[in-house]
Length: 242
Image (tube, rainbow, N blue to C red):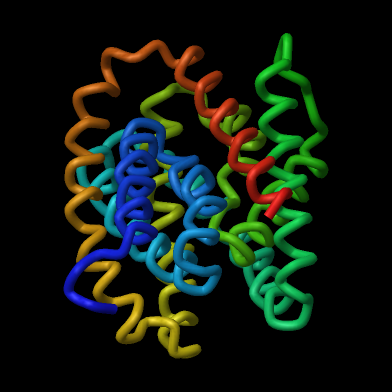
């Protein structure tokens, strides 16, 4: 990478800013929003590596600032099941063609966006099904760092308040993203291409966190989620047509 940013890299930094504004407000969905566009702008492995480090830094900040609201029992339970799923996701990424995984991923986020946007009321699932959803969230996170979209189905039941939701999911991503970072280092994905992008991304990361802090107490939660689902749908369609 040269000292000057390419147009694709500049757009990627804009995506990082938007994603971390979302992440700092909700404790999830930032990487899910960022991943489809980022994979097209800088490549699959590069996007996974850079966004993982940036998400890790953002969630470390949330964890430190909101630790008093963390549900530690649920954090431990979710972490165990998601790590099991992540191992499966990492193995799948190594053996299944990326083109097939990308189409599956695109269809998944389109389905989630439409289901969430048009849902009239919450639906009740059995405890066993909820646990399997957590495991599947781990699989998706191992593949594309985007397990939050599935995990929120469980978290919305287990975590009762907005503050507890945010404060419990953030340290979860710290645990999981640290695990993924170690694997990315092992695979050589933290290299001369991704390290400069990580350093550049710290600027929009900080700006996104600052904006998220200001918006968190002001924004209407339901309207914000509706906007998030619209952005997810657009991201999924663009990825499906790639």
